[in-house]
Length: 216
Image (cartoon, rainbow, N blue to C red; front, side, top):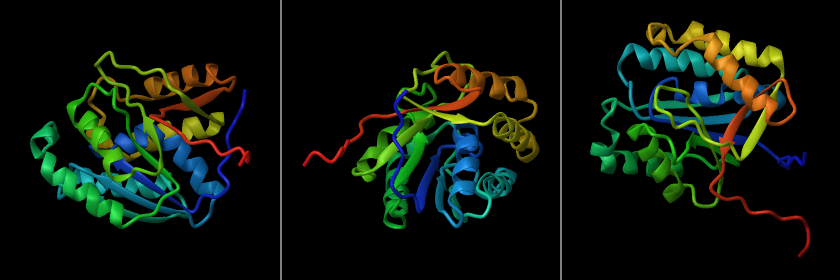
């Protein structure tokens, strides 16, 4: 299996519609990145949950998922489930966020996500991050929209277990949801691992990528 390795990684951008989206979709990858690149700049924007207990959960969670990183997080108060109705505000917030960061890598929802909040954000991301590698993460839920990842990031078994444990620790507000459990998070990671000859992995979708192989 052929792998692409970034030449440098000093700053990443994280985008989520809701508190916990980023950690669910890319938590193990964030743990790995932060430890491999001490002092990594992490700039994050979440659209909903601002001013509530969920914002506090998100701040504590991302600090744990990005150990040793220079983390800046903005959490807006767009109503959950109503992101399409606040399109102009989200567009403006995303534009302002873009001006505050120069990432080598962007994590965001993917365009095929059936949840209207995730999908609206995913559709707006390329309008601001036009010359960036954007990895669309997956969020398991009741909709049957499980994607076919085009990029897979293998993670060590202990990192997959750490991700599941951190999700349970930092998001107690979600504990009552029937799908929010260790079995699901490890199960999906195991499936993605099978698809790249690894014990566990996280899957991402790419709209496009530009290759420079030194040919001119």
